[in-house]
Length: 107
Image (tube, rainbow, N blue to C red; front, side, top):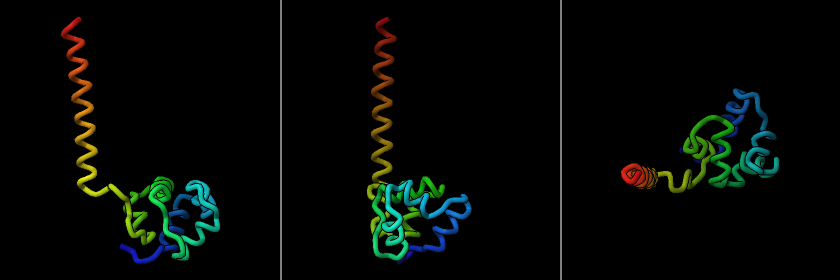
């Protein structure tokens, strides 16, 4: 994990996509001054900003967090959280299936 905001890495990803810092800031709902503070390690990115940066730059949120030196990269994105989210999705699908099968049996 990077211990600081890797400005060169971010600028290289932006250049690959033909984008500027201004575009990145606007996409994240940040002022250019706030982005400049993040680039200088004087402001940490929020989880929402990490997500937007990931989307704009086409990399994972975890990679953005690593390159930005974010102390808590992606809250709730550990393996346990992912498993719990998948279990909730499976339970919802099972409930939908049971409801659909119940309707089929009645008609």
